[in-house]
Image 1 (cartoon, one colour):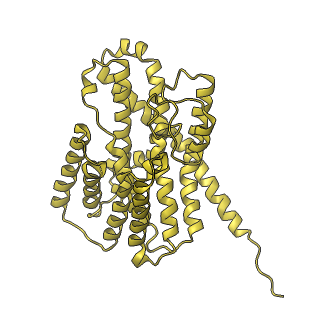
Image 2: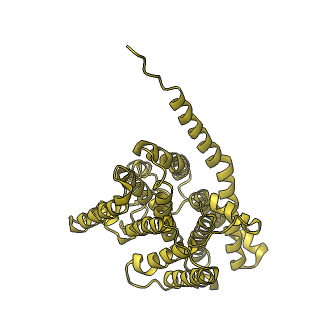
Image 3: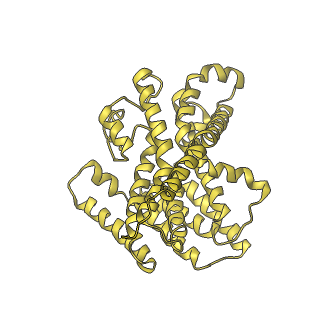
Length: 350
């Protein structure tokens, strides 16, 4: 797989961490100059496009059953997500003052564990569709994508990208025609087409299309410039247009050249490997940072430096989660599955 995908994953995760670090700083010191530079939510859009891209290139020429595909996705996503969700639920029950955007609500917790869209009870306006771990709203979409993509594995490869586009598009249309509801709002958001864009880009990639280094060096930074500018300005347009399109441009050109796993960039690849852990655990780290702000800021004497420290600590905690939980649990579930398959009873002749 393209090593640059891991680089982009790392950048996407760090963008989201920065975004939430600035939100924390707004609560701690609204007058800090750095709070004027709020952007980073676009990291999520990079993840969505990457998801569709990776789903295509890992399945288009490697036949697998629907069950095997779903199991691989569940094995990858569920253990850590359930762990942090249950941890947040425990904190919300015992020390509710620590997590400002989390309340202990049993129906909400169950919906979060089941990856179902649900109104977050901590939102005073009663409008935010988000699980217990607020950034987990993207996981609700991802599991939705995986479920539908898995079904489309039953379709021949030559028609598969069209099938997933039609399936997601049909559900989008039904959601927008249906009466107002949480599910209709969630599945009727244009952001879902970023996954479809990734699938299409994956199909293009498998054709062998490539560009010269100068073209890529020009196009990728330009794509990031558009992505971050639109993210920062927050134009009143569909997110698919303002952020999704630049994200697709980045993935398109970044994967149109073959790169070796450069030693000088290996740290970025490692962060890409750990991006899921960084993404899910950084909220805890930032919450802890908020509680020690007064003491630490006396030492740092800089809100900007405090944001840097928050990002660094979030990265380190994410790396620890990756190596101490995500990797060993993934290996255990993989070996457990293989041992069960190997022990399956053989048919006997009558």
